[in-house]
Amino acid sequence: MKKILLLGLLVSLLLAISFLQPSFANMQVYCTNKCKGRCLKSRFPDKCIKFCVICCEDCKCVPTNMYEDKHECPCYKDKKNNKGKPKCP
Image (cartoon, rainbow, N blue to C red; front, side, top):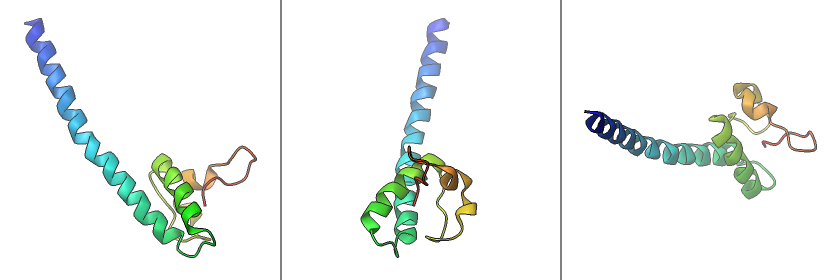
């Protein structure tokens, strides 16, 4: 009886993990697309996109415009680097 219960739990866990994997990939695509739009007018778009994607994956959101709307994503707005400056572009 315990073996059947354990096997059922293991199968359930494996199924749950298989459904989670695509969501991580979708988050990366979401972040990349949002950051490309946000960093469009940046002086260094490649660098902006790189750091924006890192922040997006942490915060699960990206503000709409480059110089405005950081209030849309407080986590993104409040991230600081080791020098106390904003980490996210």
